[in-house]
Image 1 (cartoon, rainbow, N blue to C red):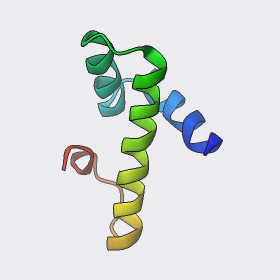
Image 2: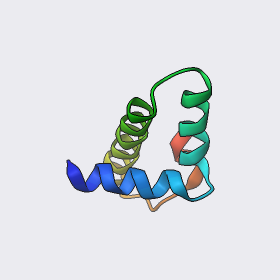
Image 3: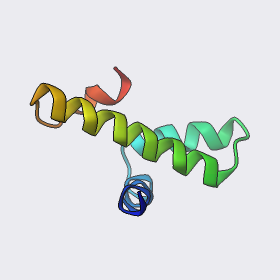
Length: 64
């Protein structure tokens, strides 16, 4: 759980899709901590899908 939280923190700091999700939530008035947890959950959903389907990382999987 903590590893996923730290990974989401790193993903939010670099430019990319996860940062866009985070910034969108913060812009809509959500607290930063809540937005970070939402990114961690989104990462978990994508990782779970990758494990189940056996697919490699694809940026477009985030919005699927």
